[in-house]
Image (cartoon, rainbow, N blue to C red; front, side, top):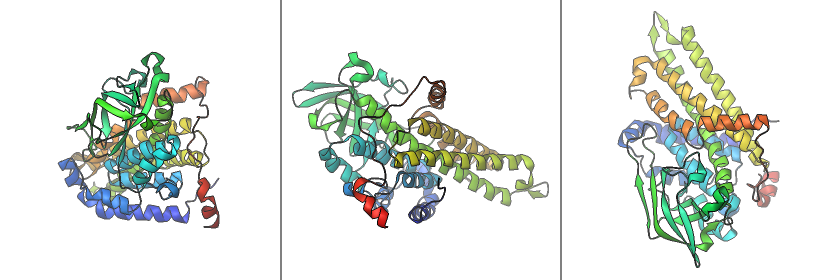
Length: 405
């Protein structure tokens, strides 16, 4: 058991933090009000090799461990949830799924350019009538010779107007329910594909979120990810990776709420002393610190299981549930500490509170994760090894490098 970060991880944290402090935080209020961030940020994420942090070098990534991805997500969300969301979707939900389930040809065609930041990937599972209940999917993929004909729609899809490639889930056999769902790689340029952004969101306003539409989209059979009927397994394993990044981002949001609150506690005085001297304010600060430390331990525990190549659905679910709840409470307390100013965009804590709500809902609501954890304890739920497991770290071709480095 080792609670120390490696020198490489510490350098990564400092680099991402510096990037966030200089190139994100000074512009966030403007981007939040405008509902979009400067596209040059994508170029900077590529230049800093942050779009393939935990992807093996042989596939264009940096070859770092899974907890290095957590560090990136922490620091990006400290700036704003939109940037962590971009990495969560691109790397956690799409690229890591390709790494786990893709054929060598699919990895070379899609994973390599995504890991290098040359192309952007996204993930299409949720539908207007299918969120937590995945079996209620309406999108279908009917076999037609060497193609599948895709029809349907998806909603609440991050990077909907930005991504080049999507992993999309559809029924190939509705009678088989969960076992009739399959996964496909869909390109934006395919005829019949379209997307539309959703406006009027409570939070994460600078992030691109919206709908995908498939109207007789012809998808070559080579673009089937995994086998027919494996879509549900693929989706659940992808969510393990996505939830891991969401939990790590929540740690960053707690960190941001705490930093802003401590700063304000020293600036603001009431009744002749700094507000940080008042015990009920101290209680909120103490709760933030407790949430930060507990959430971080849960996240890095899940990351270590990923590094070992061990199934971690239970641990990741717990981390996601608790970290997002702690983040929501920390942001709420940060607004309270700031008083009336916390209700104004003059300070960033009102944005933290707005942003903190969505992660409590997506990638498994707090209610879903509560039920999951109870079922694990009661013995009603058990995770079995998958046909394709996420590769352990150090990656096979890079073990000697890590050993000697």
